[in-house]
Length: 83
Image (cartoon, rainbow, N blue to C red; front, top):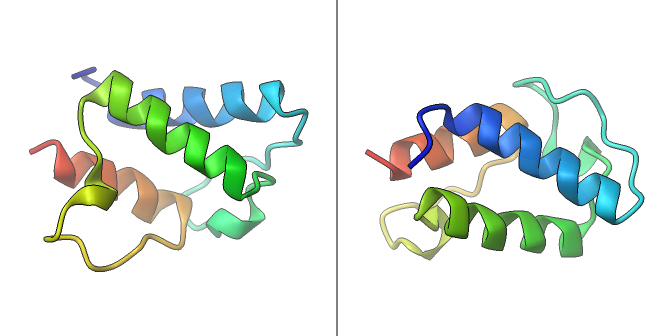
């Protein structure tokens, strides 16, 4: 697993935005995921790629019942799943 989960997530958001010709908002901790500029297909691609890169899919765990609503929560979701 990459040492900097946040950097990998930020990079993947940018790659997917570029590939899907979406304008990505500046990724701050308090940015609502719905305000990132990515649509549901983009998020699906991000999650699949992060599973490949980070080796974890926190959305597939029964322990995580709260879906992240901000970018900061999304990052922590992955960081906590990798522990």
